[in-house]
Amino acid sequence: MLDKIKLITLIFMISFLGNQSSANYEKLAYDFKFKDLDGSDLNLNDFKEKVIVVVNVASQCGFTNQYADMQKVWEKYQNDGLIMIGVPSNDFGKQEPGTSQEIKNFCEAKFGISFLMTEKVIVKGDKAHPFYLWAKKNYGKQAVPKWNFHKIIINRYGKVEETFTSITNPSSKKFIFTLETALNKKK
Image 1 (tube, rainbow, N blue to C red):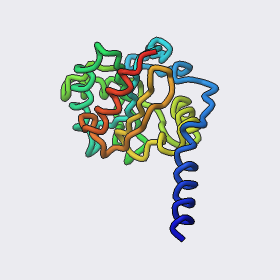
Image 2: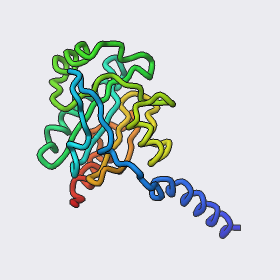
Image 3: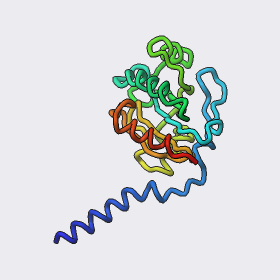
Image 4: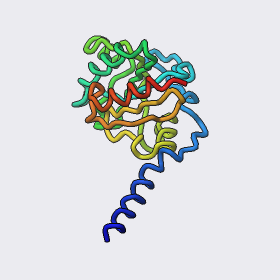
């Protein structure tokens, strides 16, 4: 009976973890672009061999204070190859109703944000931005934001390294460990 439980557990773990490791990545994160808050192209191809953290954000969310920790992480690791990108979305509770200019003003005035911010996009469902559809296809359901401040770490090879839910603060030990590990993986 114990061997049967071990076998079932092993099969479950392989099927769960297999989703990420078996991804064939026909495209990489570098194949996508956004528009920034000023309407200019923000091409991820410009960040090859960098570690990119993509976070869907909202100004009126209970997790909005994570902006402050995102900024601190950005300031600490930008010289090590980190690119931090905030992606405003109104998908969850309509908590990002503002225009690009309103979002920019809020982020700069309240949190002193200096990392990259995109224009507002859809991050879930069939109409999600192509980057998010790609992340889901290659990494699975864990890459799909369930709420604001979902974090996706893209490694130096343009692939999803790990994802974190909204409740994981960017200053948490778990997040920092994963980020530092990705930053230390040189090509």
